[in-house]
Image (tube, rainbow, N blue to C red; front, side, top):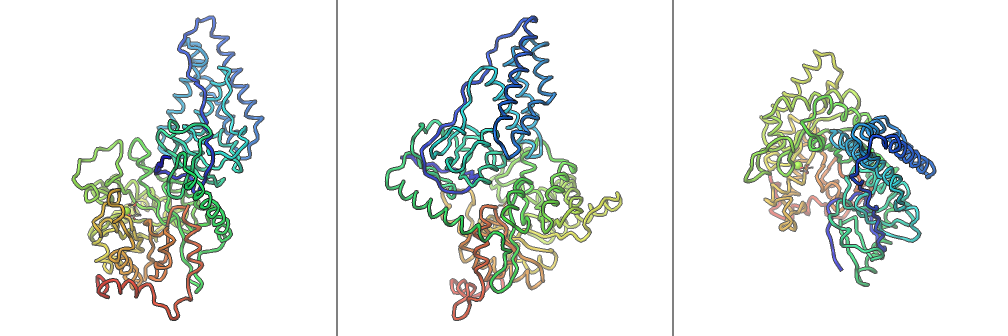
Length: 558
Ligand code: PEP
Ligand code: MG
C-alpha cells in the first residue's frame, strides 16, 4: 500500500476501482530520408493517412464538438503545406515530416499568451498522434472499449480520447500531465468524474488491474489499499455521491439567508475558462480574478491589447460582477521573462502592488485594459497587499490618470468603476476605518492575512497545522474589517480560502460578511450553508460573543 498526495485536483470526487493503464504505442518516426523519386508516393501516403484518420473521427459519436474541431485542424493548410514541403524539399519520409510539422504548429500554440489558446496545443498533438498511428498501421488504445469500472491512468489524455469517456464505467482519472484548463480537466468536471492531474511518475507505480483509491477532495491516491482502507473508501464514496446529488438540487436557488439577506456568491478564477466553469455553479460573478496567471502564462508582459481581449471576454460573461485584481506576483509567484532579485523573505519583499507602483508603465497597461473592458460589464478594480493610505491613493491616482487618457482618446469605459482593496495585511486591519473612507469595497484575503497575522508561512508544509484562519486573532481581525467597512457603508467580501470553507460560513455570516468568493468546487457547499442561515439566534450565544470570550473580550482595534 502506498499513499501519494497530489496538488492539482481537476475535478472533485472519490473513487475506488481497478487501474486501466492507457498508454500509446511507440509512435516515434524512423529518421530515414527518402529519394526525390519517392516524394510523390510519400505525399500520397500522408494524404491517405490523413483521410483515413478523418473518416475514423467522422465515424465516432461526439456531441461535444471536439472531433468536428479536430477534423478542421486536420484539414488545415498549414499542416498540409508543412508536411508536403518537408517531404519534397527536405526529403523526409511522411512520418518524420508529420512529426516535425505537428511539433512546429503545437509549439506556436504553446507559445501563445491566452491560456485557452495555449491549451490548443493538445488538439494539434492529438491530430498528430492519430495521423502517425495511421501511417505506422498501429491501433491506438480505445477508451470506448472499457467494459468494467476502472480508474484510467495515463501520461496525458487527449481531447479525442476524452470524447469516449463513459462516466458510468470510468470512475476516476489520473494523469501525469495536463493543466487545469485542459480538455481532460474540463470534461472530467462536466461529467463529474474525479480527476487528479500532474501526478509525477504515477504510471511507473501502477500495474493494469491494480486496485487504486483516489480522493480528489483531499488530493490523495492510495495504491493497492488493504481491505480496511478499501472498505472505508467505499463508504466515503457512497456518502459523497449522495451528498453531491442533494447539493445539486439547491444550485438554482439564489444565495439568500433565511432572514432574507442576499449574499453575493462569487468565484475565484484565473482565466476565462474558469469563469465558464464557475457559471455552471450559478455564481453571481467573480470576486477575484487572479490576473497573475495571465502574466505567468505569457512569454512577455502581456500588452494592453492582449489583456483587454481577455478582460472584455470575462466582463461579457459576468454581467453582475467581475472583480479584477491587479498583478500579484512576487512572493512564490515568479515570471520566466523578468528577473527577480534573490530575497531573504520573498513574502515580505517586492510583491503585488509594490511592483505595480514601481513599474508604472506596466501598471498603466493593465489599468487601461481593465478600464476599457469595463465598458462591457460590471467590472471592479482591486489592489493587492495594500499597507498604507499613500499606496492606495497612488494606485487610485494611476486609475484616474488612465481614465483621463482614455477620455481624451475617446475610448469607452465605466466612469464610476468601483476601486477596492484586498484586506490581507495586519496594517490594513489596524487602519480599516481609514481605508474604508477611501476604498469602494474590501475583500478579505485570509490566505495572506493568516500568514502575516500568525507569522506562519502559508506554503511551509512543516508548520501547516499552525496555519489556522479560525485562530482568534484572525477572527477578530475579520470582524473588525467587516465592522469598519459597514460603518463606512461599503461592501465587505472575502476571497481567501476561508470563504470556501463550509465550516466558516455561518460564523462569517454572523459577522456580517456580504460576499463569499471561492473556487467553483466549493460553491455548492457554501450555498447550502447560506440558505440554512438566519432566524436561529433566540436563546443562543452569537458566534461574535463566542470569539470575544476567547480572549480579553475587547475588539483588537477598538
Ligand atoms: C489571499 O491572500 O487570501 C488571496 C485571496 O490572495 P492570494 O491567495 O492570491 O495571495
Ligand atoms: Mg493574497
